[in-house]
Image 1 (tube, one colour):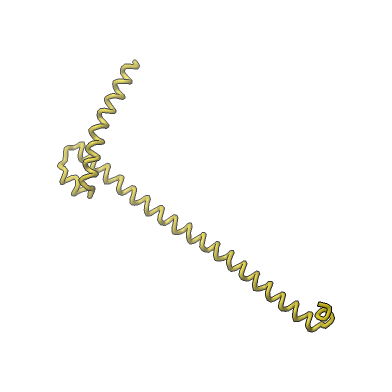
Image 2 (tube, helix red, strand yellow):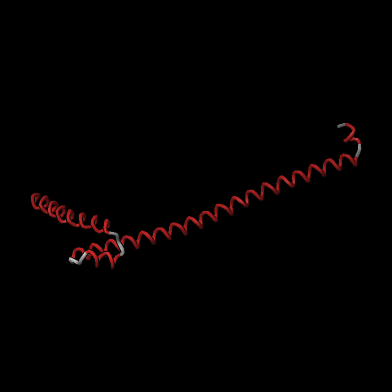
Length: 117
């Protein structure tokens, strides 16, 4: 080390090499940081788009089921309901069971309310 410090050319070369290594390390660090930031932003954008798409799909499915319920209340035929709403036979059967149980539940609520008065 004494030899390097006594020779100005060697000392300058060592300092220059050290500076280049530190610059490279700084560039790698900044590059990683920028890459992570870009990746996070892309992830947010993709996640938001997927969420919107999923919400739209859920809304469409909910509307199909609501339409099918309304058609059931109006005594439409099963085939017509399936044709118009694009729901499956099992979904239609499930809706029928729900529709049958909902009026019974509503009557029970009314009976409890009238008993309270």
